[in-house]
Image (cartoon, rainbow, N blue to C red; front, side, top):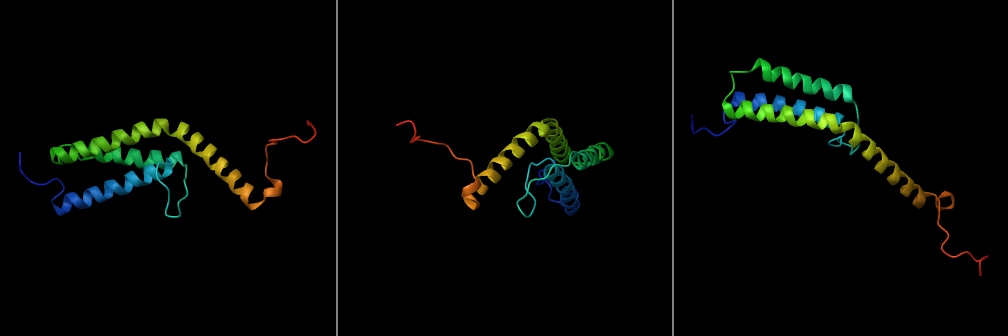
Length: 125
């Protein structure tokens, strides 16, 4: 075992930059992170493709990575696969929250059209 700092070689840094790009792509398309405009997207086909590419890279680089690099890559792939399984439930939750926020925004933009609760009914007194 060497005392090198993980990802200290230039090749290792470039390789994990690629891994990071695919990881961000998967997370972006699963609604895990917002895009540059702050919007949440769901495209499970794109997310699956990024995860599959990472899985292929894991298999194709087996035996060619340092142990820590291999463990990091396997951990990233494993985490993304687990998030992929839970993504449909996350998507429903996020869409419900987005609708709630849009309704709230409409309340302030068009108060005459907003739903309201009657706190005191003058006809009851």
